[in-house]
Amino acid sequence: MNKLTPLAEDLLHGADAIAEYIWGTGADPQRVYALRRKKGAPIFSLGNQLCARRSSLLTWIETLETASSR
Image (tube, rainbow, N blue to C red; front, side, top):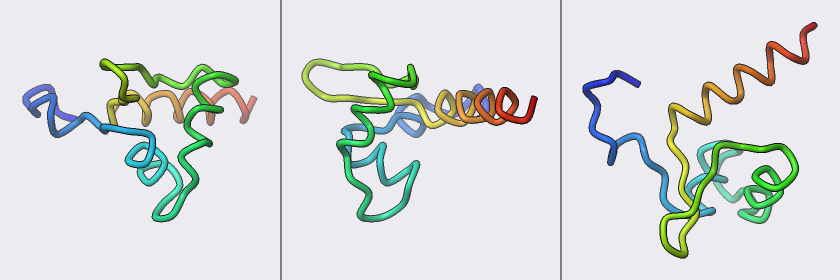
């Protein structure tokens, strides 16, 4: 994401939205909780809702790709 992009456009609200962004339509939102807990995904709470930045998720995935190719 471009630094001029408003935060609102980069932010995913809720486990459903995060799951859909990562795995596509119909993905199980419980997978998001597991990613956060077991893999340290950049997912955080705002109040009682899980959120993630699209840009942070992409960077995190790129880091996993790099590590797995070594």
